[in-house]
Image 1 (tube, rainbow, N blue to C red):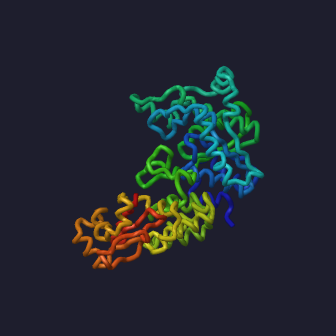
Image 2 (tube, rainbow, N blue to C red):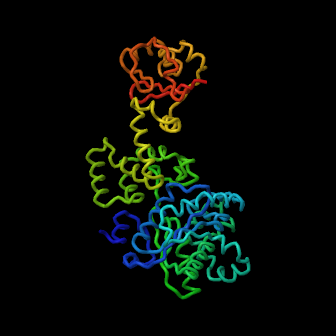
Image 3 (cartoon, rainbow, N blue to C red):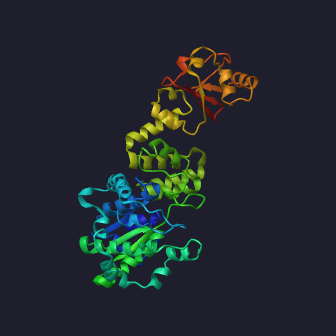
Length: 422
């Protein structure tokens, strides 16, 4: 059984440390460790999942985790990793977002020995004069300007940075101080874009309390194009099933590139080292089988949504090109065909015996002409609800309507189109 430091090292989760000896402390239970999550949407996303899993790894190793919701800092916005000023949110909007993410913050932890806190509880009650006197006096503008999150914005004079966002690092530093004083927190971690904020908090605690505390960062999860898995980027995968269905999440991870799947298996799953190395070998030797991607999808969906949803996703995935598609629930049918184009056809036409397979394939542009549609059927490449068709003149009818509304047409292996009887 690997120690926590060995596990984090194997998974590539230690990016920067404030003390080279810090990993040794991970193997001695008793630390109180925190990570913060600002509520800039009503759900966390897969980019947040790395930190949630890391908190859980610490708890399983005998440490006490604190999951900190940024109800206060969320009103300001962290400039880290952003080229432009964030839009300010109202108190009501932030409270609505907090209601969404609170359950997610606690979902991955044993709450018998974990804390879920909100920094609005202290940031909302300190006065401006108190904050400037008790926190601001400990830092120089020179220090703050030198931080990468600020410096990069200074290098773009047409964009700059407001005093509001400039002050964010002081607020996060104060968070660490309060957690240290009130709850004995001695370790903070976050993504690598949080390094400057973390080190500022360590400095503040040293100056105010004379205590030694520590910090480390994890790598950022980046897409193949180098952008972050973030809320403001395209293609966000949310942890809330109402925003990203379990099947969508499953398919997202099934489609992970061979180059990235090993990294995500380490970051986002609790699979053993041996299991991950075996999947690494599968990805290298038999990439076409995508065993590593399927294992990743099963593990993440199971972690976020439960094993029952994993079973539904695998059933739906298998049904996408099989006759079992007729047995899927309407919700799952729409999920598995969400990327397919659709064409509306009057219901009376479908039920009246006028809408033949040839007509359907031409109308939906799966075939350029009736002659091409006829050839597709005759050559065995035409499917209705994944059942191969042999008669081009057969009319579609009520028996072809899934959930009394949908017909799934397919040409060959991949070209899918949905007919909506309206």
